[in-house]
Image 1: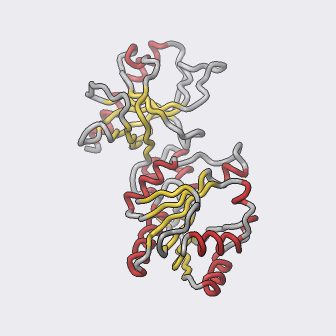
Image 2 (image 1 turned 180 degrees about the vertical axis):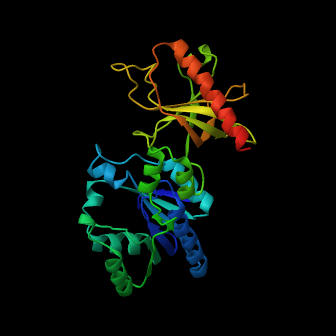
Image 3 (image 1 turned 90 degrees about the vertical axis):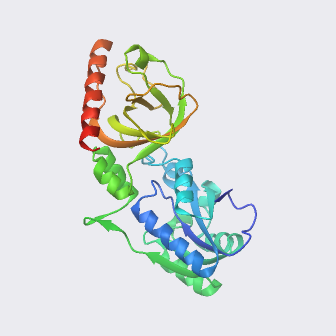
Length: 313
């Protein structure tokens, strides 16, 4: 899969396109990507995704933008796994936001990307003021010579599958529902870095994962599976949040942390890139009066995680 930053040179050949934010790359997105690949094969064209960085809501209202489900790297990995040929990462800035719907279609889709067919979700909007919609795109397609189709909303158990619905499920601690919407357990990936090594002092060594999710879509203590440190996933317990006991008010970490204690594992993971899949929420983050109380609770969390893994072997 080829990745392009912006549109500095025209596409080398005709493309079948889909456009969107694709946060989380959930079940609905996967239906759209499957249709993209099918149409790409039928038309012997490059199957390409156009996505935006940052998320438009982060540009227009950074203080109230929703928590991201996936980083750009995680999205790109999901596109590659789906079989996409090319991804165009579009810098979303003031100039791009001011581009009219007509210019969006003529300059971006036709001249730069040589679109033969465009597939969108039924709620996709584009151009300045979000004035561009399916009808606008369809009319442009008739005039400029490319096909257009909109895929209907994907529903599961009577509920619309969307990034917002996944966020709501995660925030409520309903990881099973989120996994159903995503077609996989929710996961966060990052590199193992050096931390304060307090976990080792408490008897529960942790892998500290550098993450870029801020704000977080959820917080708490979880039973997890870590991939990237061997042929098989490693089971463990993770704390995702701000560590209120170790970072009290006034000295609280400015960025969230992901710390993972891997069960029955000893080894050096520094520098490894791990993918942490969240399987069960065990509890919310808590503040403890002293480190002994924290140590006791961590031991209870480890027992709870072992019980969960034993019952879901």
